[in-house]
Length: 382
Ligand SMILES: [Zn+2]
Picture 1: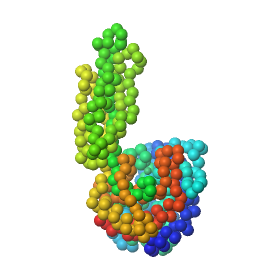
Picture 2: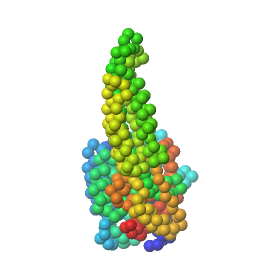
Picture 3: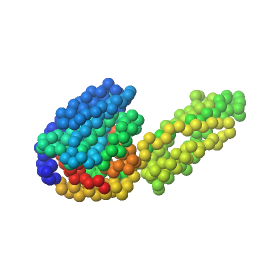
Picture 4: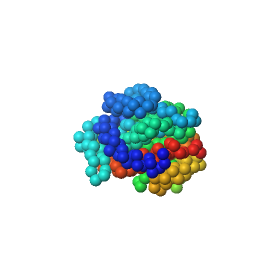
């Protein structure tokens, strides 16, 4: 099969792709709803096994389970890991206000772009190999997890242990605007700062109190020193709270901070800087918790080489693929940090991920499916 043949095939399957997408969007799957997740997990596992995969389920504890479908290859070399997640950020019942709909060449609905369209692409590609009666060039392990949107606490060890046995990781997260692939992602951290001061009557004995709110304000200013935008390091103090009422000197205050870094050395520096925070006010205690839950995906020479191959393969179907970096994390951060060459953003074109205008461009589905098939067939281990 050459590129144009793949493309013709998937264009003839565009309706089937859209039908799979609709079925998955209509199975709502918020990350923390085990019961809802279980239904989609069954749907996905059945599809993979109908397509000839050997399916294994990794129990997800209080969350959803993770599904691995193993497909054999024409050669026995190390597999390609094809990675997706079936959870979404949308709570159960979102379909009532945001139903699956197709209009003007776009499909809308909760999770349609992030990333049920990516899952539909994976299923279409594996179905095509089956239909044409030949195995992919190398074994393909399709891993579909249930907790990416909450930082992958349960699936991370599964992803890492499988990825470390694979030649490469292909991640079906949404494409960059315009269709570019993601070859770098920031590492993501979440920190919490707890301040304990001493309460006192604000009028009767103001000197006896130690204001946790004032200390927090000073700490927030100090956090600005940790930020280093020229290195790609940003901090966002996203939530603050403290105090009880106006005539009490507040004994308690806290803040939650999102941290993003582009490199491992910045991750280490920021972690050390949080550890080194000390109270400015006497008799006040501060406690720091949290940390980085995703390492940065750095654009290594192996990732650059893999992208260059993808760019050349994309030309076979008329795509001029671009690449780019994003501040958002994904499970590609884990595979890349292990040194497994990773291409991310292989999913559909569209927009509005995590927003009410979430949509995919339906005509992009056949070309993205053809691209994934070409990559599985044509990528050499860099
Ligand atoms: Zn996603």
